[in-house]
Length: 205
Image 1 (cartoon, rainbow, N blue to C red):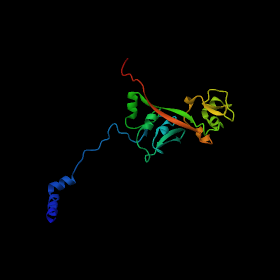
Image 2 (tube, rainbow, N blue to C red):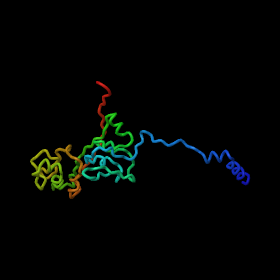
Image 3 (tube, one colour):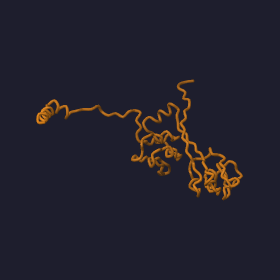
């Protein structure tokens, strides 16, 4: 035991070892070009589409707040996982992270949202609250009755024969106002996120 301790003391006491230990150098750290950092604003105007919040998988990581006369996404770094989905989902290029925007423009890729209106026939009472509260319905038929009945077929949904019937699901904006208005939790708005790619032409045709 004593011999081993003396050997270690001699070994670590060598001038060459001490110099190597005290003046050790490592290669400088560099950020890879593909690195996705925290999303940052690009300076483009936010249109309050809220797709960034819809795409974000991390609860509380992003919110769109009112700033001055407009809107701006705010990133909460304690929650953000730097996946970049908010950058990809924004149709107006308001956020950037790494080379995501550059890659999307070069390859013609984008994320597209659509919404599915799902009604549970067991829970639904046909009260029509979802129909009358829907902002799109109010624009399509300002005269919609309190029970959700309408003679207009341009609405998203209306009450027919005591049941809520979905007519134009493609018009849903995903605001989920109907969910909050339903007294029996019978309606849900499912968000569907799809990746698309357009043909990118390089150079003259």
